[in-house]
Length: 594
Image 1 (cartoon, rainbow, N blue to C red):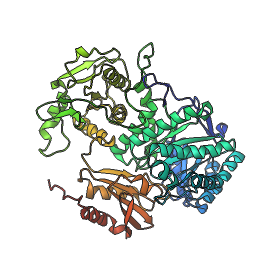
Image 2: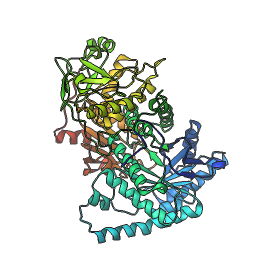
Image 3: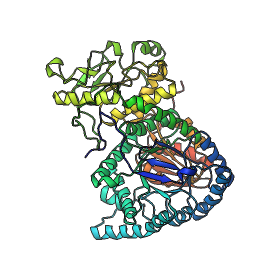
Image 4: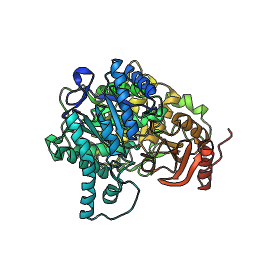
């Protein structure tokens, strides 16, 4: 299977056009040859009409092209009518998307008023109780027929009213039926979405797109690759557009890095027609990151070569993460890389001299090697490798500077050339091969480094990394560690999975996230999920150690993994109870007074 036309010569995946609204009157066309569309979502209560109008206007002002509003009940869905009418009367023609999860009745109401409806196959007329049950073929088909019967009326209304649809699968909310047959896997996510697509096609409805979201960038990348490959296998008329997003990415630098790894690496392969960056921040900030992400892709994917690179088979499986097998290399007296060693952080001599004197003895964030001091062999990946030219498999290698290739292409080619030569040398990744003049701003440097290094780490390539695009010494060191944490390669601090807030949220996510971080950010290696409601909560935080989930207004449920263990805790006490839960399970350590 192929997930893109070429991993070396980037061409955007060809898709059909999906029309959202009337393009002559403010609507958008997703896919085809049209630019990637930027989306975001309201964070206020859908019944607060004035707030919904104001937030929509604020998003449009900063360049948002599609606005999503949750509609958890029929009452919420009905209020989309007054919201849309008020926006149109004020001259705001941006397409509105209704976000539907558990209630088909809400979808049938919402489709009357909005240009697009998003449904989640995992919980639209399906069951998600984490029940373990064997489905034989007859039972499976019976359940599928029941879901189709519940979903088809919405499809027919979309046809009649000329609406668009998003079939949005989430890693955290696969149905019990899918989970029991396919497991909590990328394949399960893809098959769940394809089932709903077949329902649409049965009614000759094709004005829909797919999404495959996860809070784990590596899982998200695998899912979209597998979906793109499966659609290609199904035939040329399955060329539906894709909406990209890393769900529950969090806030600040961490949220931006996770999004850049997931969204950016797929865009760099030519996959993606519309994007949303999900941050636990005010929604307009998401659009600024979308803009910066999209602006970087051309320079990160196109080289100055006049002829395309020759095609070559990949030396890794793009649909299932496995770290590339290598020998071990000595970096210095203290650190080694490759083999079973963790991915190491290398810095330049200039950075080392600035940051090393200020680093406490027990600090987790520290340089593990100096670039200029390494025993390093620089190679041109455009050329075949003579095995005799490399001293041995324990020789650390990298791509030579100033090679006129994008870093992702260059290091993928290097991995292939080493494989062809039968060599298992560890690889040092660089975020840039050419000096940026003038230096990139910190926001842009962060995204570029996360895309370039994160995409390669998601391929299983890389045993040490060097960040040079960020001009600040301390910032470049911290960025390198944060990329490794976001890519799931290292855990040097507390990891947070935090949803971006919406009208379903039962508490102030930004305030509560800050409060939880203040109490727990010293817990290295602990993963905490902060979820505003239960829609994606139990599943999306399945690999978290602990979960803090809105259960009812003013009430919090606490989880271990995806299992609820304490219920209806008053919000005023919930952070303390979370700390108690962490302590009771042996994961708590007291913060260092220093």
